[in-house]
Image (cartoon, rainbow, N blue to C red; front, top):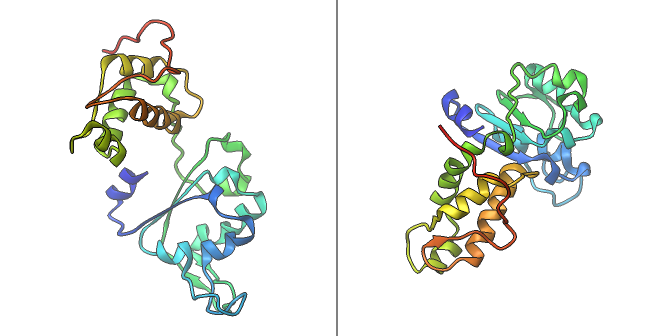
Length: 211
């Protein structure tokens, strides 16, 4: 998602997980509101669309939005037009939409799905274990402060071969989020500058062969 945005030349990236937006606040979060609407003391907000004007709006887990709220996106995806809550006139946002979902794309409202020009199916980690060491390297580049504190060094800790082997053999259900959780667990139980496999990460089967 970030790579697509960076290559677009657009200036701003606004990213939000749709599951974190309460259903009652969805329109206010997306479109914004004028001051004192709907309640006195409510601050003026431009909303995510206003923030993403001239840039990219990424909505993760869009399949979790009820179909009624998916329908609210159709007009803005067609021509960029939307209305802030409490405002009489419409606004126009020049924003590129990128969305992601773990659901079957057919679960999306059919007319919303039709508005996405390109669809990319990302295989799960079980289907591409050779990517796991590369993803680990990326995660460790921004290793948590806790990892550095435990290792007694400013440098990011390094995973040992047994940890990498266990992670490539693991049966993933939560994909990258599960991989990150296992990495954080390894950081919690390891000492020094080497990360070892936590007890619950038992080896299963033979290690995969990579070209």
